[in-house]
Image (cartoon, rainbow, N blue to C red; front, top):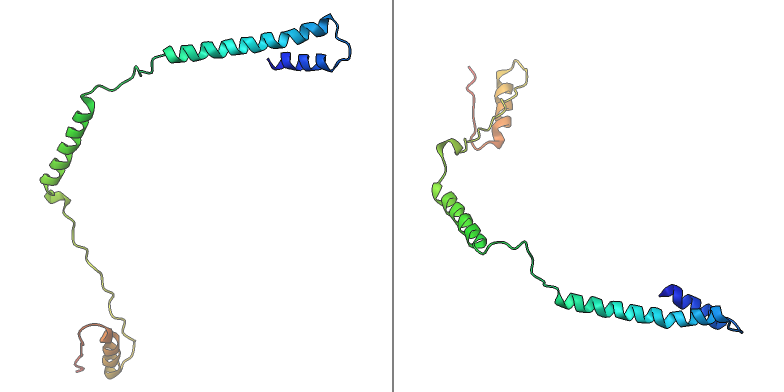
Length: 128
């Protein structure tokens, strides 16, 4: 169609039209008629075509899947936890108090008191 239209346009641009020019001018309406007939045939075949999908799921599949999901959910909810799955309590490791290496027992007691001042209990050592 595009080639026929381009040939017809070049033929119209000529001042004198010979037999080749008339052939090109006559080819354009014939090409247009072919395009219109092809479109009409395409529309009629599309209207006759069925839109059913041959790969349809069976009607029982959706309710069965919903039943399965409900069964698994109820089973999980009612089963409780097993003894092997119980979490073990986490033990927190405390650092040992670092004491300064002094020979004076009174200085050691004060250092320990300062070190444990942030705890909830106060520990006093009796220096003997």
